[in-house]
Length: 337
Ligand code: SD4
Image 1 (cartoon, rainbow, N blue to C red):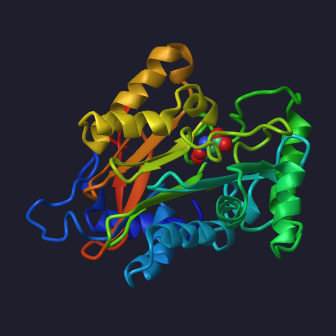
Image 2: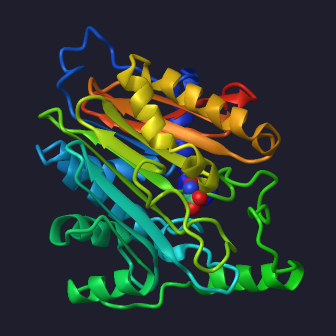
Image 3: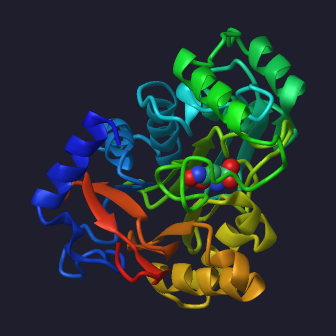
């Protein structure tokens, strides 16, 4: 954890922010509880991303504009090895980025395995708004971005390149669920996708998800983050969900869609996330012991909940009353974080 992240986490801890381990629900006596704007994000750096989104949400901007701005912050301001410009490359030393954006009316856009473009989330939004398609990948995504005015820019940092060289020196170049920097693939010291969900003053929902995916992945590997229904799903009738961790498990289970559908059946956000995690475990009980999967959900009333396979998953909540509070989610293996 870098100094800024440590500071934010400590600030949240000293404010008693981790007191509610199983998710956080809006106070029903709060007159804003149903109508107020709110933004939630994965991991401790969600605090900074929420601040960037809140600047817009608090002045009446749409949830869609807010999540794009929050994700842009993570892509450029946060320098961490799993999101945006400071991301770690794949096993061939190529940094590829994945992102998706969706609103509650089912409008969505995504880019996968895009190279040398610093704001994949904004490219995803343009795919949604300017094309008849939902997802563009690789070279086509980059061509589209450049046609929309983005500049190509080498993003790989010297630190990420060095980390890759060190990995190459000791690894066997085998396809794997990367565990090089972590005892548990997908956990926070290894993966930190930003998944962000927001509800605006008008009760409209939106979500964004942005990542460099798993470090040292096979060239061409795409995770869940740009796949609508896996890493992100939003429906104004019900709520929204996003995911972080080993994306193959989210894709296998159409996980964010599953969380939203469980909420549609009446589950509270944390319960929907827990049930989706249980589904992941049922499908691959052995694998589940050694990889991390995390879900975060926001329903149309503004209630928030999260759940993870393993302890360690945190999420940040920001609204008019509570600015940038960090919560630990519950987990199957290890209880609260
Ligand atoms: C992926 N889900 O590409 C992403 C990685 C991630 O926290 O979430 N890391 O599989």
